[in-house]
Length: 438
Image 1 (tube, helix red, strand yellow):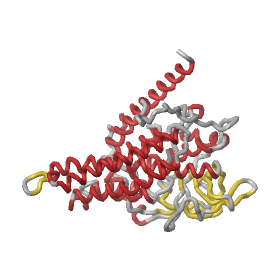
Image 2 (tube, one colour):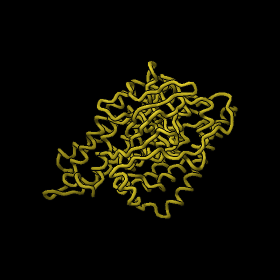
Image 3 (cartoon, one colour):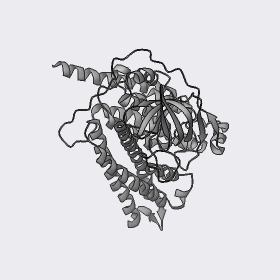
Image 4 (tube, helix red, strand yellow):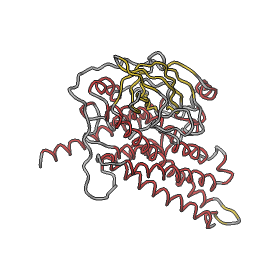
């Protein structure tokens, strides 16, 4: 057996053991009772709005020096059009699917009402190692090559449980992924150890700004060059878990050069957080981040920012797949069991065709999203594929949410059934930028 084959086998075994160990830990904790509703004061703060300084941050310092940035190599293509997940990816998806079914789905209604994800859920998602998916092995991660497709599959599986909680759980992974992909050796040594340790910090990727017809390539948040770094001024919107985040990756316009990414620690003076209660994704605790002469360091290049936007949009497509699949799985038995005029309503062609269309459109959404993810992880151009996926997932995902409500009739309008929440969450796919990254 060649050295390369031995290494590949060892990497796969190590990957599996790490994930299974994490699974054993969270399953034991889950049996202790997870569905405790968030305290009333949290709900009131989110419902009425709050304004606070940035969260107190831990001390981010470089424990070791890196000679150069650690980058994951692109995945090797097979030369065939085959989107079948690898054995490792299937194992990861199995773990996350069980987590979504046993933890996220039962607590989804309470999290939506409270406007926040239960801290126990966030802790258990951190134990799964979601922030390690794109971190190189030499920096404490568990992968040896680019795994954008794994990120797509994980986001899809999480959203099948609940999209709002999925965004809250995946927010720190967006920051660790950005630093892994585009951070220099100092940034990686300073921040990534926190994301690979036991106490993963809350963190967020903030791109959206509070204005109509927002274009991520035309930003009003400004970065001004200083002798020792940059100063940021502006407002970012729809930032998940903004009130508790310790570090942000902020998109800002760099003078006359164009948009770029910047690392900001929330403890700096000038960082202010406002609640931003939303129609959907309420469990993600969306916030506004106000920046007033906030010191920052640049992350990556102008070209890296364009990739960040595309990979974020790919993540939102993956989230739409999971939620749309949840709609299909819910309405199918409903229309077969609900009777009218002495027979199941699924016997009506209008109903049967509507359910069939949901399944057809979902398969199309999944195909273009997987193709974009596969090309991204192989280092191939993927801008066209992401654009197609975003358009299809935005339009058809919203239609699936609408049809889900319609198929339940009056039941679709009340909170007794989850389709009204899925409808609200699917509305976010076409307006959100950032927050998640694959």
